[in-house]
Length: 467
Image: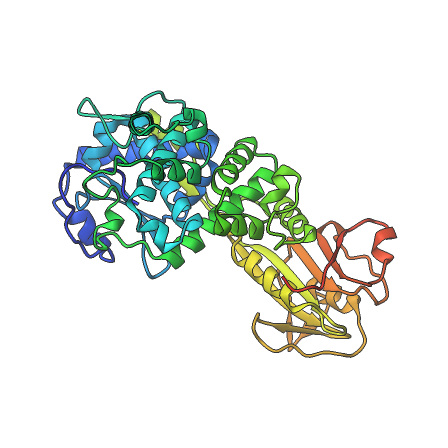
């Protein structure tokens, strides 16, 4: 996912050696400092207004390295599960702030594309690669409020979607075919691809647009891309459900652009429960309404994770000393503590446990504690065998998570942000110390006492059919 091309092939560099990247033909320190300032300013704007998805993605690129080992910029997804942002300092300073924002948006969108359109046959098609460039730059122009591509040395850099559309119109007209309007041409990512495939000679550049396609020079491990991008999309979804209007608009637009004719993208959006943003059930029916509801409820109870922030007091001090203000990364004050308690006294749907495990694993900064229980509490780890079958006591769970009892000689010594109870509900009712933190998932045919309990607690009935 490297932005554009500048005429020469980047050298093969050991991307695992970060110090070697920084030391490779080092740029002038002043150029590096200015490039870093532009990059930080662009990411701050993303977090505040322009792209919640890009902001979350770059928050996961814990190493952001200025290096001349590449000509432009690239997001590296390495096999160890980490992502790095590499950027050429001279390239960034030549573009200026608006150009840097465009390039970083472009790079983030490439990661999303690789996640949603992971079909190898598609990615190997140079016409699809061109379609991706057209789609990404079209959206970037709109979202960033630009009318032209960024200029470098007075020349536009990147693929101009309008010029590609002009080639498309000329090609189809010359062969007696009817081109669609530009608005239709750019309606969805797959529509761009389909229209370009109608051409006799699509304007595919002679050189591949993305260095990830050029012999593995910049790694793009699919598993890493999937994990990082899925987590960023989920956190953007949670932000949207907490009232972040920009995140909601961006996700709705992204969903609309990627679902058409793409089963994988539709399935991913369904698994995230993103259909609730549109007030409709997912087309794939792979996620029941209660699961989308749970994503929403958890989003209201768990605070935001890592973001780029401007430290006001330190910024004022730096300004007084004549120094440029710097952005800082603020992670969560502590991990959010989530307790998932699994009633083993009855017949519990195994696919629900699997879905909960995947969901919790994709939420940043969550410390999950898994409990099985019948009349007593038995901590476990996902994948381990759970035991039970005796009577059921919700009070045993409350006493443990509220620190009044011990299990295996240890007390639960942290305060949970949310407690998820998966049960059939057949046990004496309880009132936890903090009922607003408890989420009850009642299996089919379960007890109804929670529906009339005072004070009210979040609850929903889950289905037991397999996904």
